[in-house]
Length: 321
Ligand code: MN
Image 1 (cartoon, protein in one colour):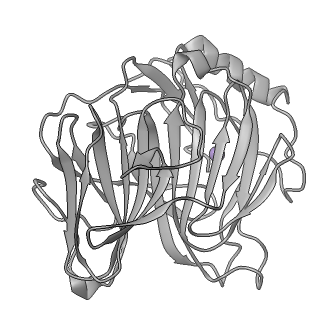
Image 2 (cartoon, protein in one colour; image 1 turned 90 degrees about the horizontal axis):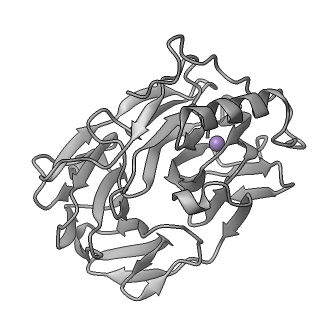
């Protein structure tokens, strides 16, 4: 996924100073192919949850009448991308030569480190199911791994366990003694939580973690899921944020629901994000933009279309807000 804001501003990524459980509404954003996404991170009042610094929720969309997701080749530095589907089929290609289909229950984890380019597309119909629904997340890399070698991993066999009334898939990190095989570089959790028949589940919090909970879907007539302590129920397009120090995350629903939970230790340093780059300084971002324009990220082979052009730098320079 790419940030395709034609005139992106630089944003400072930093830990929030909130001390109460809250519910935030997503901003609507376009990702360039007509798809509208719900951008849950970063927001003005909450930039990050642990090192999770970007969270888009899209769909469910019926793609049978169009091309579906078409995100042309674009670059990343300083972050990992997490692709997670609730429904559908997406093809990933990158400048390392990776070509990987992903289906629900599987994880695509791309580590950009010093630089990688990738594309994401819905395969041609009729090979793909009509519905497309998922989340795209970015994880900021800590300073010592900021310029790591780029890498791509596909994990089709993640731990799934029963917890309360829920089925929990450990996408990133650890839950109840089960650990995801995904390599991450700071203390993090990423969990798909399904309540197949409603009910409730209490997830013990890891030491010093803050958490975010989003509602993926569920029959409207059932009512939206509730996060214990939150001032409102969460529907798709909303994020419940639980600050660091909470003892647990309890979610309940009257009927079948799918949720996604992210957690981590709040960021210890401010970072700069602009377009698809996470860095420590404006100079690092400008250098990455120049490198993309110069073709230095390598070629994404096989995508039937042109790469994304780098947007112009803000007129006043990269002064993060
Ligand atoms: Mn991307």
